[in-house]
Length: 219
Image 1: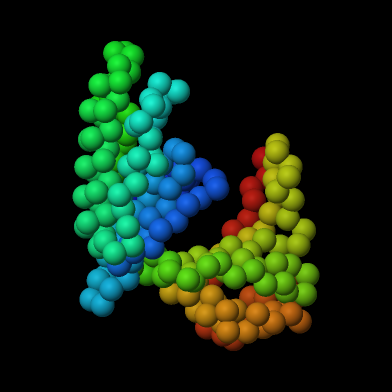
Image 2 (image 1 turned 60 degrees about the horizontal axis):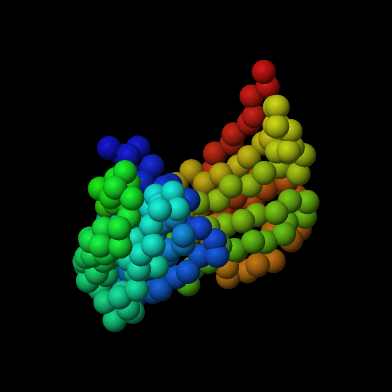
């Protein structure tokens, strides 16, 4: 069940075509692009799990009104998550009807044109609004810290080798560890300015940030 939820989150993140558009309402964050949308419930007191609605759209060039822009056109920032969700689902059904009225080719399977999934994710893994990733420069490497994760590659990592990439990576052991690093770097962007790759793990240990090591496997 956990792997399914993680896969839906991954799909929701990858579906939105760039440039991404975003709308933030009362308790939700809606992002959308050509190929799909993600409606994320935001943090509220007492909520340990937050809902995520993802919609992917297949068109194949057939459709004229069955598209993401029309699915979200009645969502506004005064809505709650439930209201925004209801609006999106209603518009999907309305656009199916309109598409048929316009004479869309009969071999197009309207019932499979939009894949809709809703799941629940841990509130710890949902980025609060306004908490954008932080990128800081250390002595000889770069750190991109996100609210729920961080992943740092060693200076000698070679990810461009398509046949057999070589890398060493340090990443967050938990969402809590990621938040701790994020808060440290957001408060002090120069915190790692004099820290080299060789001393990075010692710095993480001193600051109570738990991490994991991963290495490439040479064949």
